[in-house]
Amino acid sequence: MKSRIVHRIKIKKLIKKYEDHIKKGSLFVILLFLAIVLYSTGVYWNFIYKGAHFQTLDRENNKQQLDSELLKKIQHSSFEVIERDKGRVSNQNEGPETIGEPEILPLDELEKLEQQDPEKTGEPTREITKNDLLGKIDPSTDSRFIRVPQKYLVYKNSGMYLRSEVWNAFHSMAKAANHDGIDIRVASGLRKFRQQKDIWQSKWDGIKKTQFGYLSDTMTDREKVTSILVYSAMPGTSRHHWGTEVDINSVSPYYFTTDEGQKVFEWLKRNAHEYGFCQTYTKDNPVGEGYRTEPWHWSYVPLSRKFLEKYKQEIANSDIQGFPGSGLAQELNTIENYVLNIDESCK
Image 1 (cartoon, one colour):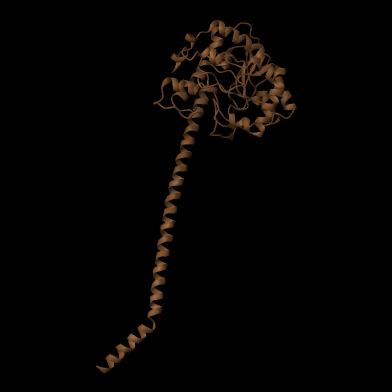
Image 2 (image 1 turned 90 degrees about the vertical axis):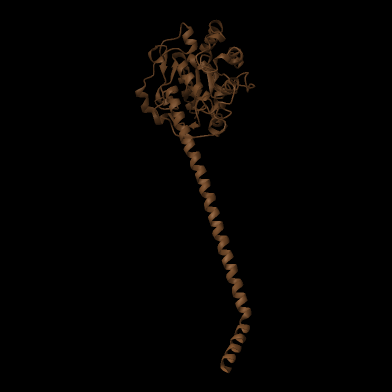
């Protein structure tokens, strides 16, 4: 009995002796446990955040890929594009008929393609019909048109056509530009009524982006029409129907803010008039009252001036029909505000 008491007293003394150490040890264990919990929580939430972030990126990438595929289909029907040059895509300030800026390769790298599309002179345009004005023609069977050689195209195998006089003038200008170290190519030329309708329809349906984003069914017809008209013409009113207009290098406003784009634009402003070309749209009109500035859009004045005069004589707003929103052509005075609202040098 006595030995047990002595043993207990020793244990109590021992516990008391190491009590402070035990307390400190317990505190350390508790702090270590809390640290592990906090670290694990941080790792967990970081994982959750990153997972959500990457899922968002995946969704955005999938959406962009889907948009790209849809746009490719639209451009295939609109421009008969088979293969597009690689280029940087800009999601800001998208242009009217394409996205991004194409890679402009040196002309000498595509010299061999010249053999596939021999240069021709073609026949001049002597008579201008109503179908010519509305784009209801087939340039592939019309001797007044030239298929632009591959080496002068932004989009390979895109089947671009220009009237023979326009092609001859552009060809001379492109060679002069190349001599000065500037590459200019055709991003868009003649556009038939059906092709313009495809572009219009894709924006109307919210498949292709406008300057204000994708259009929705909650918008009124007037809101849709005026949004599209910031850059894209109503079918039947596009000067591209005439085969006298050339979009040069890119139809993205962003491209013309780059060093290369600015050099191209400055060269065109200094020299294009010597070859008969003018910049068609040079001011930013209010929405619903005209197009915005298009540094890419150049018109061959000796011929487009004749088409413009004929258009004023032959075409009325009532002729603009066959697509969604066409009923607003009269209300918006489309011919006056869009067809005739061009730079003075082009009149």
